[in-house]
Structures are given as structure tokens and as C-alpha cells.
Image (cartoon, rainbow, N blue to C red; front, side, top):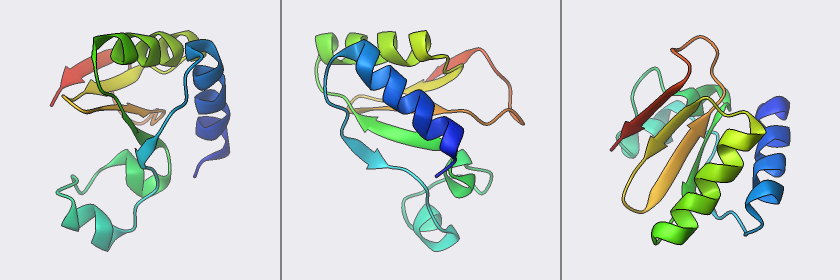
Length: 97
């Protein structure tokens, strides 16, 4: 994993004041393909995480922490939140899965 991404994630968890359960972090090419990840996935370079998120309060607290910690790329799924620090991609974006 990218050191700066991990440091930001630690800060986000502190701001959220809840445990973060990481569903996915760095992925090799084979694993990325097996889980349906894009060939340009930020997971492949260790700059992305998927955090388990169940329920609206949990989702809010995770989002609060991520944004406060400086994450500018966030994807929201029904049961997880993706966050990455890939500066090669568009920033200040939030998307839905």
C-alpha cells in the first residue's frame, strides 16, 4: 500500500471515531480481474481501499472522516465505500456503484 494513502486512512479512522473494516486494499492484476476491477484501478498501485459500510450512520461517519482527512475521490456502494488518492485521475469526485 502507498504510505501516504495509509497515513490518510489512519487519520480518517481517527476523525470518524469508528473502526474501519477494509474489504480490499492493494490488488494484484489477477485478483483485480477476478473481482471485476477496472484495468486502471487505483487498487493496482496501492492507492485505494474499499471500507465496509453498513447503515446510514456508519456511512456518514466514514464519509466524514475520509473527507476531513483529505480524500478527494470517493465511491459509495450499498455495503462499502471506496476511497483513493490517485492524483492521475479526476479529483473532487463522488460516484455511486
